[in-house]
Amino acid sequence: MKIAVYPGSFDPVTNGHLDIIERASKIYDRVIVGVLINGAKKPLFDAEERVELLKSVTADLDNVEIDSFSGLLVDFAKEKNACVIIKGLRTVNDFEYEFQMALLNKALNPNIETMFMMTNTKYSYISSSMVKELAAFKGDLNGFVPTQIIEKIKEKY
Ligand code: PNS
Image 1 (tube, rainbow, N blue to C red):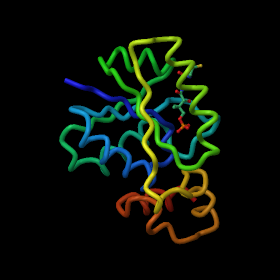
Image 2 (cartoon, rainbow, N blue to C red):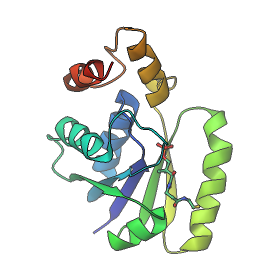
Image 3 (cartoon, rainbow, N blue to C red):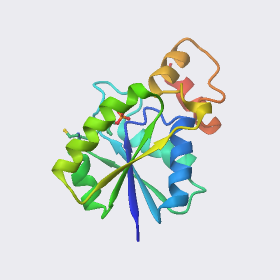
């Protein structure tokens, strides 16, 4: 059984994240989305809320599960028996940092591979920070985040 971990802050989950989750779920037997606890200093949604949002938008994907973690990603992946870490790449700007992370994670645990998935071009400019800024200025979130979480984001502002 090939298990993959897809880690991130997901504050909040965007359509770009969801696209990667859906595509990864077709490749791996199980995809475990790992929500980083206490990544950003002051997240908009706490880890429990981020897990709930992710659960609601992936409810139709049978082989996807959502969990949270703190500490090292490679330890979380090992605990989940995952052999792969999935990372989404939007632009070349993402690459340098992600390449460094992949090498570091490989040094920490050589049994775990990092696999990069290119974002769908439709979503290449979407990020959680951009979504938050848009929401703060009362912009239209349609098309950027799953529709079922739009109200939850608006409630925060
Ligand atoms: O969505 P993000 O904020 O870009 O996700 C970043 C994440 C969670 C993938 C990254 O911060 C991470 O892996 N954090 C766990 C700590 C860790 O293992 N760091 C790398 C070795 S120091």
